[in-house]
Image (cartoon, rainbow, N blue to C red):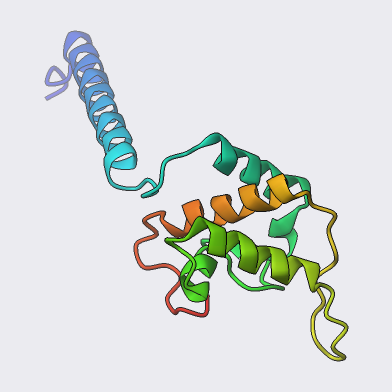
Length: 150
């Protein structure tokens, strides 16, 4: 019985198992990459305007209050589906106008409500932020958030 697992057999088990799991890892990595590229990405192209909108989002730390697809703070509304809620998903100009009007009206000054601060954002940045939110709204989130209100 002691000769069942000799040094050469143990070495073969080690190398065979290592090669097997490296192959499994490579196959799963390739499958994950293909899934991300073909299934899990946004329905709109990633344009320079969307990139600028993402930079505006990050520079003003919007995620410190809002969530985007469930990530971020829960102080303010989810914005991953805000363009669908506003009915502006297919109209970039309407998306800009609604977002611009909303941002200019902040803070609302209504007693007892959470207040969004006023941000100095240029028209170009506001259009880019609207495009970023339209782009985020098209991402396949596998039915997240679970309700329309976010």
